[in-house]
Image (tube, rainbow, N blue to C red; front, side):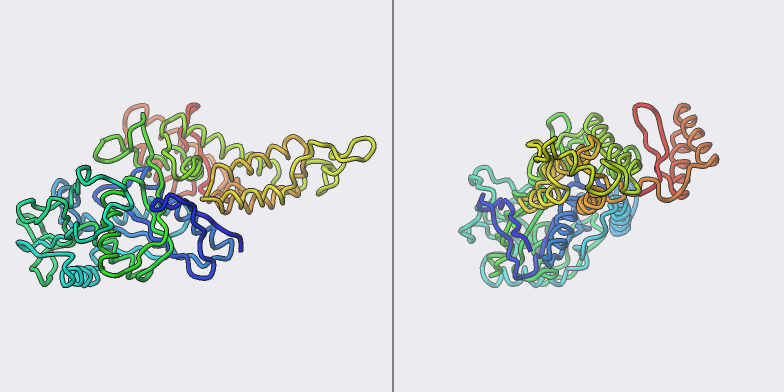
Length: 475
């Protein structure tokens, strides 16, 4: 079991994971007031693959990704859609599950809903009230921020820069402008409510995650993750609530950077979103996953047609490699290792100084990169270096193919190793694709979408690119 380190947002230092106990990972999931965009998919991909890597190294990893299904934004969106908020949230939760299922990474070990954790939330709020860290006012309950001396230790913000945003609650009910809502009294126009010692209402956003994390992982767990936009106030407030209630809470804080369009964070409020479902339809599952791990998870990641076409080109290079070497026997010298050994020697039989690393060495470097703060771009570089070694005749394909397959499995791209498995192109599918293109040209987008869905049922993904649409077997 190799040592795995993670850059901790709280301390600013690299922290080594404890190999003697379960690595519980709690990653904040979506608030389901619309379909998720590709930026929401980044933490889902990062933490799913990180947990996969840990398990491959012998760690006992448990991944929890929550869903916030009661929220002010959900009430607003449901009213606009003309639906009861509970039905709207359930529909958006199903859409979230369907969209992330298409990424092909499996599901987290647990996906708790806020509305199914009300008892634990109320119990935690009661403890905070009893200890003096929270107070009731007008049916609301607020956390008394100044009662927690370590407040601000995660975000390192000055008091005057602290804006509690949507969970600020009513200023007239608060003792201090810094305080934030733990429980919100039921208001006219809200069509859901739960009983509590302070009257009917619903939980605030921050307290939901403190409670759900404890229910699923216990009072202390290894890693709390999420987007860097959650550092303040969401994660700062989670720390305050849980530690004020006597819970050790998360040992390490792991934050992914934002997806950016024209140097602006992608967000629903900014109106610059690109839905995950749309990205999957246009570019395909493998390209979306490859794009989302193309940069280091902690850094912002630029999004646009150029970046996605680069990802498409990368996955096509890998897919074509496995098409060419699907038997694993082609390559240097035809037999495993023999030709590569000959090319490593000069006329005297001495090894050449520029002999490439062996596939096993590449695989070790790949894993070391992932163990070092989950450095996926460095790991992917080893994948493409090994592909290049085979293509340049320096390494036998028979030696490289199984190693590459193992590497791609760890980063969610194993379907590229069997590029033509599944359906075969037939006249019917091709005719449907042509009809879809005609519908798009005539701006009959509903019909075009219908044909795309029918092709998906037949086992095909439609990939739209600069050279037009093409059919690719679904991974």
